[in-house]
Image (cartoon, rainbow, N blue to C red; front, side, top):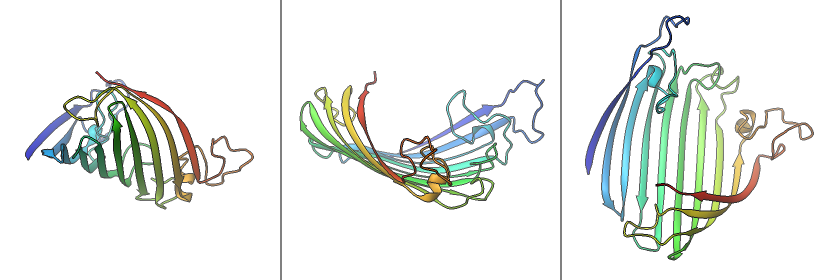
Length: 233
């Protein structure tokens, strides 16, 4: 395997004519350490640890950092990402993430613990058609009442998807990343009371089936279907 490390610095150059926070961090660090394994089950595995503070704490790319953030604004996370293809017929991916955020700007959602897991196996039936399955679960726990909008209960969301997929013939690198593809998909999802109260699908804690504008009414489960084209160059 290979050990990789990276450092990014975000410089907050907000206009001096605009009132600034007295605790603003002018230069914010974002650190990454990553262990990479190649040729593992025909794919790869990446295990990464990241830590950031200040304007870099949301770990977003250019143009979407947290402006006027202080050194008390922080996030750390662990990411496990695996892609596998042990045979020409079987491929898939697995991902796990745990993240901890603290003192993000804003009245709600600024201090959270979050973890999520997802898996997407695929069965290649011929050169131009495969069946993809996907399952995932996300858990979010506010650290305090202010972060949770008055509710510190853990929010949970589960989803399962099946997707018959048309594709071009895979090359020597395997079929998992072959594009373009056309997918027909059906997804079943379910969420708990805390997730409903947090507005996960446009609902509220006091959801009213007559007045709600959510596509799922006040139900805590639903089914969606559709088609998707995916391509990259």
